[in-house]
Amino acid sequence: MQNNSLSTRRYDIDWLRAIIVLLVLVHHAMPVFIADPSAIVYAKEPHVASHLFSVLTSFNRQFQMEILFLFAGFAAFYSLKTRTSGIYVKERISRLLIPYIAGTVTIVPIMTYFTALMQGDAPSLWQHYTGFFRMDPANFEGLTGTYTPAHLWFILYLFLLSLATLPLFQLMRRKMPEIPVNPLWLLLLALPLAAMDWLNVSGSKSPLVFLVLMIYGFVMASDERYQAVIDKYFPLFLALAVLIQTTNNYLPYGERNLLLYNLGRWCWILSICGIGHKLLNRNSPLLK
Image (cartoon, rainbow, N blue to C red; front, side, top):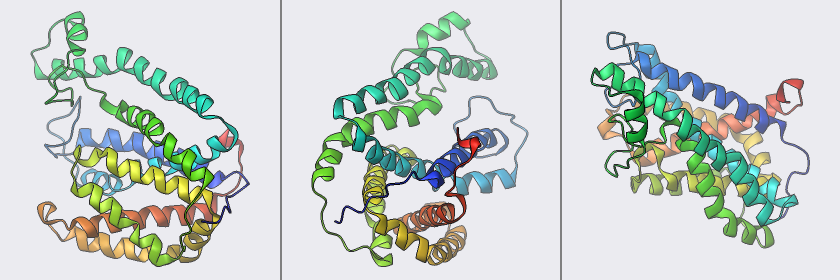
């Protein structure tokens, strides 16, 4: 692959990452007001059910975390251009592992304690806190008072995947394979996502899917031809995303076509990257 990496800062990625993070905050508030019994919610109003929020959470769930892992691949590429592996690991420890540990010790036990209070059988706060650090391999949701990463799972995944991909990324920096970049090739990248999704590791939080997306982000950051193709063909990707979304909406969840679903969410991601690069690739004091 040609080493045509983008040399200027990608402000569109900064903007999109900030927007997606805000969207994630809203997304995690909406399950309080939906009737989905499978939603993991630590505090919920049992008599409120919003169809609109149900639709929005279902839509957002397709791509919001996936695009953050894609951008993590971009960030890894730019970071390793100016940092050694040792400095890269130290930064991930300080920026990811330490905040994860701090949040697990201080915030998450309080969240799960509120769950116990709502269930009506809560022990004392201290009893709950000390019991929180017990591990239940069959249940990491935290709804029964045992350990859970809760919403901090993203930080934990990002830390572990950053370490797991480091040897591969250093190898890829030295020698990248020659790959033709065109719209068909970009669409075919949905196939590995579907394959990892099919393995069904941790359901919608599949580390294998996120691993593939981080690698995609690293490769896309290394060669400007990817963004050039996305910029040119994002209307096509957007049309496919809408078409597939419309088709999937008429299919019961249990009859969802795995390949079609992953092609659809990959088209949403490509569309967002294309629209963001066109409209948001400019600096602003808001990004500081």
